[in-house]
Amino acid sequence: MTEQAQQTAGGVRSPLRQVLITVVVLTIGLGLAWLILTGKPKPSIQPQEDPLRPVVSVIVTELKSAVLAVHTQGAIEPRRRISVVAQVGGKVAAVSDNFVEGAFFEPGAVLLEIESDDYEFAIARARSQVAAADQRVAEERGRNRQAKREWRQLGSPEANALFLREPQLKAAEAALLAAQADLAAAELALKRTRITVPFPGRIEATYVDLGQYVTPGTPLGEAYGIDTVEVRLPLSDKQLAALRLPLHGQQGVARPVTLSSDFGGRRWQWEAEIRRIDAVIDRDSRVVHAVAEVDQPFTPTPTGRPPLVPGMFVQADIMTPAIDNLVRLPASALRSDNSLLIVDDSEHLQRRVVNVIRRTEEWVWVAGLPANLRVVGEQTPLLMAGLMVDVEPVNQLSGVQ
Image (cartoon, rainbow, N blue to C red; front, side, top):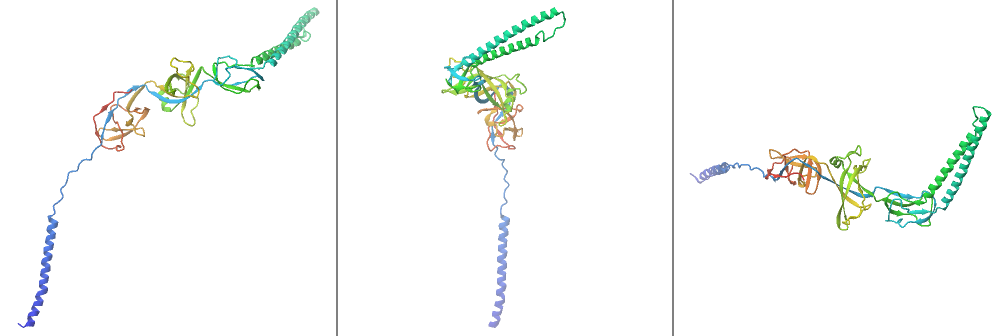
C-alpha cells in the first residue's frame, strides 16, 4: 500500500474511535448517575411527638353562704347646719363668749343680744292700746245693755241692731283683739332681740360683733348641731343588691356601719347606722348615696378617741345579710375581664364570665358558678381558651370566709 493510501485509512479510523470513546464515557457517566440517584437511602418516618402541655393548678368550687363587708367612703357632715340670722333690726348690744368660731353652745343659750329699748317702748304703747280698747269694749257692752232695757220698755218684741249698738260693740271687740295682737307682736320682737339656737351645737363662723348694726335678715354666723353627724356613702348597683337596701321606701333601710379613719398616728373606729337613702341617683357617677348617722359624736371616751368633726374623711364597712351560693377563689384566678378559665373533662380550657360580688387583694367572691368545677388558680399570658393542659393535684378550698 502506498503511503497516501495509509494516511487516508488512518484518517477514517480516528473519528470513529473518538465517537466510540465519547459513547463509552457517556455510558459510564449515566451509569454512575443512576447508581447515585437510585442508591440514596430513603428517609425513615419518625414518630410525631405530642406538644408539651402547660401544667396548671386548679381549685374545685364549693358553694357556701357568706356575710361580706361592702367597702365605701365619704366625708363627715353635720345633720343640722344653719345660718344664724337676725329677725329684728338694731345694734348688737351683747355677744356671748360662746359666739366665736369653734365654740360649743347648749340649746337655748343666748349667743347675741340686740339693743331692746325700741322694742320695750313698742310693748308699752301696745299695752296702752290694749287698755284703751278694753275700755271701749266695756263701754259698748254697757250701752248695749241699756239699749236693751229701753227697748223692752217700749214694748216691742223686735229690737233694731243699730239701736242696740251691736255693730259698735263688735267693732270695739275687734279693736281689742287687734290691740292684743299688736302687744303679742311687740313682745315677740323683744324676745327676738336675744339670739338663740334650739339644739346643742358649735359655731362654725361669725359675721358680726359688738356694736354692729344689723337689719332683719342679716346673717350673724353659721352653726351646726353636735348631737348627730352623717356621712353620705356612694354605693353601686351591685353593692345595693348585696346589701338589699330598698329604693321604694325607708322601711328596712337600717344597716350597721363601721367607720374608720387615721388620726394622730392611730386608726380609730366609730359605730354608725344607715338610716335613709338619697331620693335621686347621682347624675354624674350613677351611684346611690346611703346616709349613715352617728349619734353623740363629740362625747369623750376613755380611749381618747377624737370626735367626728365635719370634713373628716372616713372609710366605711357595711356588713351584708347572708348571701347564698357564693364561691371564694384566689384573686389570681380572676382575669381582668371578670372571667375565669375552667378545665373541662377533656382537659381543655374554657372561658367563663362570672358575677363578682366582692374582691380584695387576696380573694374574690363570685356568684353564678355550680359546684365541683375545676377553676385555674393562677392566670398567665400563655393560658387561653381551647388550650389542652395538664392538671396538678387539686387544691380544695376549705370554704368561704
